[in-house]
Length: 609
Image 1 (tube, rainbow, N blue to C red):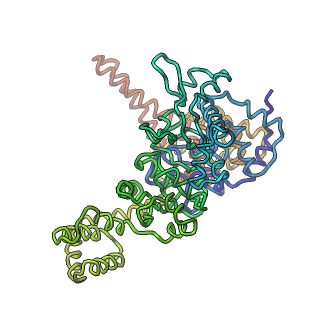
Image 2: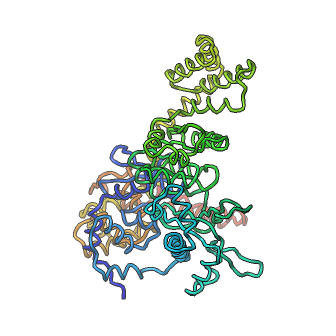
Image 3: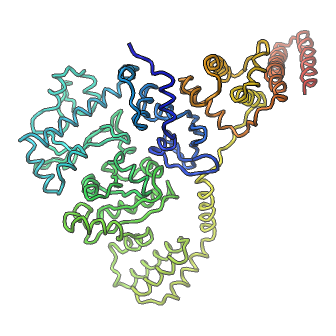
C-alpha cells in the first residue's frame, strides 16, 4: 500500500529550493520590478506573460492561467504526479527520501499510453546502442563513426546505435509480450499489407533523438549500404514526435545556452555531435527540414543570440538566408550572427580537416552580421566584372543598407564597397541617403517596431475586467487568508458564502487547512490543495495587484456586496427576463404585476448604492 509523504517532508523539500532555479531550466527569465518574467513554456507568445514571484515562491501565467509552487510547475511541465514532483525536487535539493515514499510515488498513477511509448523507445535505444558498441554485426558501423572522429565516450553520450541487416527489434519486443497495437502506434515499425510489422530501420547507423527532457522520441538512420536507397530516413511523426517542434541535442545544449545566452544552429546531426566532442556544447540542429516557427520560439525562450553555422555549399547558404528571414520575423529581439567557414566546408568536415583549435577559433572569430552575409550571398551567380550586373548588385546592397539602423555599420559597409568596386564612397552615400529618404514610412515602422519590442520584452500584465462583485470576492478571500482577524470576522457571519464556485471551494478548503495549521503559508496551502485548477486560481489571486492590504473596517462593505447587492442584481436581471417573456405573450395583466415588482427591486438597489 502506498505511503503518503508526510507534510513536514514535503515542506522541507519545497523550501530547500528556489523556484527560480527550477523554472530557469525551462524558461529564460528577466527581472521586472519585484517579479521575474519570461515566455510561457506551454503556449506560443511574443510578449512574455509568464511570471515568477520569488518572495512568494510561486509562478503564474497571465495568459493561460497556469500557476502554483515549484511542485505544480513540474507537474505541468513533465506530466508528473504530486509525489513524483516532490521526489524530483528532492533530487534537485539533494535530499534523501525514505524508500517507502519512493515506492508510493512509483505506483501513484497508472502507466499512460505516452509513458508506455517512452519506455518502448528507451528500450529500443538501449538495444541499438548495444548492437553498435558490443557486437560483431555493428563493427562496420562502429568503424565508420570512429573514422568520423567520434570517440566511444561521445557515442555513449549521444546514445548512437546500429540497426542490423536482420530483423531485430520486432522479435525483441514480441518475446516480451508487448501489445501489437502499441508496437504499431510507436512508428518503430513499418506495417505490411497483411497487417504484419517489420523493423523500420535496417543496416543503418542510428542517431537517437530526444525531447527537451532527455526522453527518446525518434531515430534518424544513415544507410551503410552503397545502393540507391535513401541515405537518411527519419522516424515519422507520432504522438511523441513532432519534427517541427524538436531540435536535436536541445536537452544537452539548454544549460550551456542559458549560461552563455548563445545558441549555435547547425545543419546536421554530425555537425552538432562533432562540435560537442570539441567542447562546443551549445549547438542544436533542426530535424532534416528547414527551420520552423516553433523551433525559433523554442530557441528564443533560452537564448539572446543565434549563431547560424550551416554548410558552406549553395543549399546551406540558401538555408541560412531562410533562417535569417524567419528569425527576424518570429523573434526580432534575437541577435543573429553567421559563422562563415572557409572553403565551403561544413562544420564536421572543417573540424576533421583542421582540428579542434582551429574549429573553435572559427566559431568564435569567423562571425559576420546578417548584412555582411546578405552582401556575400547576393554575389552568388553574378558576373561582377560586368558593369550592368555590378550596378544591379550595388543597388540591391544599398537597399539592404538603407534598412540598417546603426550608422557606423552603414559607414563601414559603404567604405568596403567603395574599395572593392573602385567607386566613390561619396556617391554611394548619396545614393544610400536617397534610398533612406524614399522609405520614411518603413523607417518609422521599424523605429516603432523597435520601440514596441523594447517595451514588450518585459511588459506589465494586462488587468482583466471583472465585475464589482468578483472584485469584492477576490479581495475578501485574500484578506481572509492573510489576516486571521478578517477570517474570524467573516466566518462569524451566518450563512456566508462566495458566489463564484472556485472562491467558495478555496474558502471551504481553507477551513480544513486552518483546522490543522496555525498560520497561512502559501506554499503549504498550495500543497494542501493538491489540485492544479485550484492552484491556478490561488496564484492568480496572489498576483492580483488590484487587491489592497487587509482592512477590518472595509470587510462589512465587501460582505454586503457579495451577500446582498449581488443577489438583488440577479433578481433584477431575472425580473427583466420575465417582463420580456410577458411582452412576447401579450399578457398585459402579468406585465403590469412584473413591472411593479421590477420597480420595487430597483428602489431597493438604489437604496444600497
